[in-house]
Length: 170
Image (tube, rainbow, N blue to C red; front, side):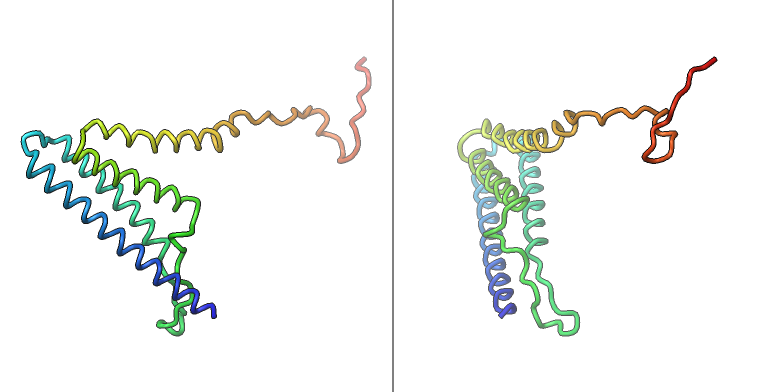
């Protein structure tokens, strides 16, 4: 029974990955045809840099998806599927943020290709959200943690559990 669930997860992940690869190819083809062919006079080095940036985001996002959807097979029987990979459609955490980044980048590429170059400003939102979460979950709790109680070094010299007795100096 566990093998059936792994097979279903594996098949579902393969469908998702193939679907989004085709969507990304379609978006890039539409962008290149419209932006380069029809708007060649306004196509500049900045557009090439933006296109390289979006392709980098796509490669990183899809690389994360492929890595998390990677199946595991039995060591003795290489054709027996043990684990179908993380379900891409039901996962949270980092994969959820990766989906968000992929959707924002796809929207950004279509908006900058067909509407206006000012849509590049939309891609400032995800890093700011990431910094916000980093601040509230990691940095601020770390820097606002109170210092531990200072321990008197003279009190540590005695035997464990006993207080050190001090006498008057003559």
